[in-house]
Amino acid sequence: MQTRVDIVLSPAQAADAAAVRMAAAQAAGLPLDAVTAVRQHRRSIDARGRSVRVRIVADVYAGEQEPARPSAVQRLRSANPARRVIIVGAGPAGYFAALRLLEHGATPIVLDRGKDVRARRRDLRAIQQFGIVDEHSNYCFGEGGAGTYSDGKLYTRSHKRGSIENVLQLLVDHGATDDILVDSHPHIGSNKLWLVVQRIRETILAHGGEVRFDAWVTDLLIHHDRVRGVVVHGTEELLADAVVLATGHSARDVMRMCVRQGVAIESKPFALGVRIEHPQPLIDSIQYHTSVRDPHLPASSYKLVCQANGKGVFSFCMCPGGIIVPASTSPGELVVNGMSMSRRDSPYANSGTVVTVDESDWASYAKHGPLAAMEYQGAVEVAAFNSVADASQRAPAQRLTDYVAGRVSASLPGTSYIPKLASVDLRSVLPAPVDRRLRQAIGEFGRMMRGYLTEEAVVVATESRTSSPVRIPRDRDTYEHLGIAGLYPCGEGAGYAGGIVSAALDGQNVASAIAVANGWT
Image (tube, rainbow, N blue to C red; front, side, top):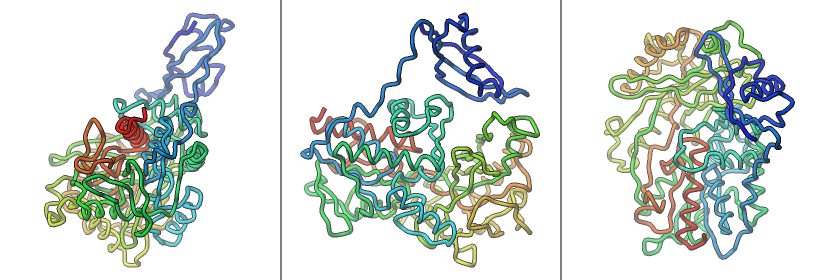
């Protein structure tokens, strides 16, 4: 017999398996010795009251054993070399497309301009410690994509796009903890996700797929409005039945290549702003209503949103117990992002705080046609870089209170940002409409969340890679490009996803569509 129950426990009780089992048995109306297993189905923290509680939905088994979770890897088949699909990009969209193609017996050929996930770490150290930006291997480019070394958050609202459970189970099959199947806001952590990504690659190779690094796709092979393959490094031609563009949100050269080759592309709204960092104990005290966080509770997070002069301003990619990292993909630009390790034990909390921007913002860049939004985005990043005189990855910053007041900070608080900060008036960096809306919204956030608006917090520019500033149009049913047969725009870079899980789901859907189109089902 299986019974689903809802229980509410203190953080200490929720961390104690025996206490969870007892509470679940009581909720199911069963004596403790009759319970054979308790499996948590969903777990969330409720901090709305003065006393923080943990809410658990659990399945209670009596008279039967808990069923094993089926492995999603068991669905994979050996690759048929006669069925070839080139996937440009080894991020979540690309790798999950490859796994789904293997379910159909096709051969995925994954090409990534960057390095494998282990070798990539050396280039991250180079940008952190020395300000050296490798244009092919950085926080955005390389195996695993932008999400691998920027937190590994798995929360998504993309419930209608496919099976989130299947995506999470595949991650568990490759080494992620079972907790991601239960937690309401699952998270792996950058110190663990890279190993999961490496194991996914090993699975692809073991089933006959191919993965190539340092493989920079410079052209598409298009004949009579059908893509036939790609060109790598300007010389090597590779042919396939279909090509998936899963390049991520920062591959500007790919977008320019599309325009050059007549592949339809268009600007789309995105979000632009800053990253705001607070001391984590301050956020904990605000959210958990206590001066000292319960040791059984994770570092707390927040989510804020409001309207400012007719446009949305919102917190984005909040990293409790995290650090700010340099996410530039070319020399001469300054981009920041946030990440956390699995334990989220940094003394700082950071979050993107961004404003929705649209064609009214990039109107002066109209001469760039479909790439107007992308060029506008890039100009802001260059302005941020140029605002700091030493041409490094030092980031322009202000104390939060100084930013709202419009004054340059005489000093800056401590920060997790390793390349260090420089005191700069951010009005010289951010476009005026974005700056005005940010300052208005931060004042509103301070009223929503008492203690948020503090001189202990620092504003760091720029948070500009929230999503792709372009979209590559495709058919909503077949996922095929509108104009070039056999070409499948996919994931964040194509404008159809916004995070690890939604990109993975899009990759799966695109792969399934390719299988249907080629009769591989």
